Image (tube, rainbow, N blue to C red; front, side):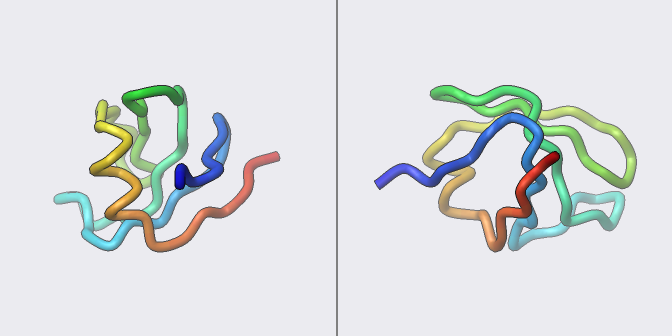
Length: 62
């Protein structure tokens, strides 16, 4: 039941980042994901289960 999320994809999440951005670039996948905010450049680590619950849309990368 895992989503197909790959490095380089852009994710649109349900909740906004404090900077106002909703789009995140996937830098690393696995049990945890490393994401970079497309607006401010901040990087976060988030658990797969939590991320899959909050993804609104997956935009494929190059």
